[in-house]
Amino acid sequence: MISRKDFSTALYRLSKAKGYAATVVLTLGLALGSLVAMFNLNYQILAAPLPYADEDQLVVGSTAWLEKDGSVMYPRVLPVSIFRQLYPKPSEHLSDQALFSFSYVGMTLRDLANSPQVQIAYTTPGYMRMYQMPLLHGRAFSADEDVGSHQAVAVLSEKTWREHYQADPATVGRTVQIGNQSFKVIGITAATFQEPALTGPARVNDIWLPWDYAPGANASPGDVSGAHFYLAKLKDAGALQAFEQELRPQIQQKFQEAVAAIPAQAGRTARFHAEPLRQMMDGDSSKATLSMLIGSVLLLLIAAANITNLLLSHAARQQRSMSIQAALGAQRHHLLGSVLAELTWLLTAQRCWLLLS
Image 1 (spheres, one colour):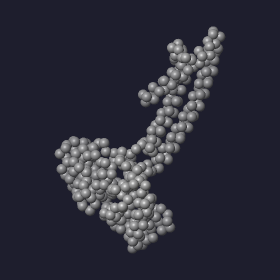
Image 2: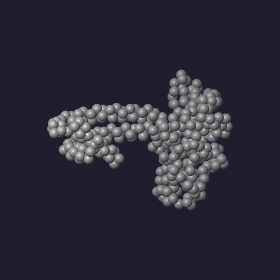
Image 3: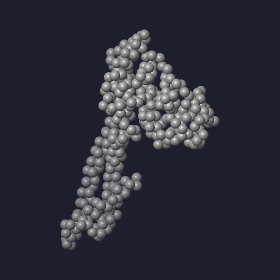
């Protein structure tokens, strides 16, 4: 059993070997901190539930654009005109669907004196239903503002409403000018809304407009775009393959018909595929984070080996004092208690350092 005397003696010895103690604490702290950070990162990316109901039923549809020889030109693009035709007649395997697009460049709020730049997304009512967009004021898009309605309405993010419109509730119902077009504000999203990172984790959209106003929404047959997504919610998570098989021949036929009269594109194909929302959002990041986790484990093993060497060398330096203690009558458990007390102080210091950092 470790006594109070063991702790005080161990603390005194460590105070005389500050370099040794600091090296052990920092080495173990950095290695453990890196491992914990990588573990949390992997959990958030690979295992943490998404903040949407029935997340396993949410999918993202796109097409791979294939060259005449079958090679992939673009792995994830959308033939916009074809999906605009298919949208009014959704698949029997779906319970909801939406079209989504975004602007690559910021747009200007011209109704404000400082003309701030904002990020714009274009979508349909299904997007707000599938991802349970919470509203602080007003409402989301309705069926009357779906594809083809050309209703000039807008939903603002809570951040945009607070920063540019001073959190004025009267903003709902007023008109804002985005570029050369005026839109009536019908809703303000709550700050708790977590939009799916379809365009990468760094982008946060400020305003949502009807999909009819998206650049390229009226694309010609044969045109494809990487700025458009087809979002869907399956009736059953197991219907993903059936959903793909249903749409793939329809899209391929329509695409072939669309490009037949275009010599430069004749013979190319668009192969439809749908992937789970989580898989689409993760992309290649899952492989990268797993690699970093493995690297953190290896780093911890290397740190453990170095710390073991430090402990052995420190014990060798303490051999003379331990021999004297044994000659004076100290038993084996007394010496072991002193060593354990020293390790306890080091582990306690390392834990406190991790908590403070």
